Image (tube, rainbow, N blue to C red; front, side):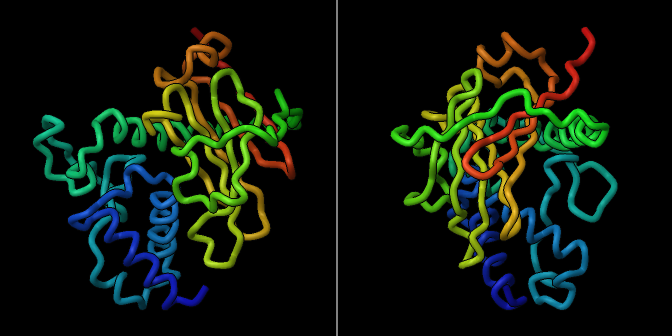
Length: 245
């Protein structure tokens, strides 16, 4: 994709994040793509872009600070009906935004723990999930996906999983993996997404927490890292070490 095309895409995503009609908080794939493009900017891939020079700051939700800074950005306490964040202004609940922030930290922790386990030779999947040909993909899992080729897999202790090509692929066929935790199929809360570069399979790391399904928490202790890896027509599930109680 050319720099000009990336600039147009980034501008559109920023409008969805910071504009008057902001709605990106309810679209995990769009939010993931925005963070990916912002990451490219921070690495200098688009250093000459006018968006780089004039764009709004983006908050790094995983660490509570603006990108490129080391100091935390203070977050004021506010009611759901009294917020200044343009993303929240559309009526998105605090629980959803908090779940997003916590999940980003959890994903980073899970990635480091599980990667260490896999590189040490413990690469046998805990479970393998197959496609359910006749199963319906929940609407909340289709946000940002090409609906025509989205598929659903066997549930994993109450966790719903789906995959498909991103609507933001622009001809590059970026495969995405969607994970819906307890209640996400109807409320949209607890929806997580990860997309891979063209030609690669997506991997999504997740940490069991209070928002996880009761079935999942009955098997894995809170804080247990899980990795969902798309592998052809199946999803391999890896489990990291459970925390000591």
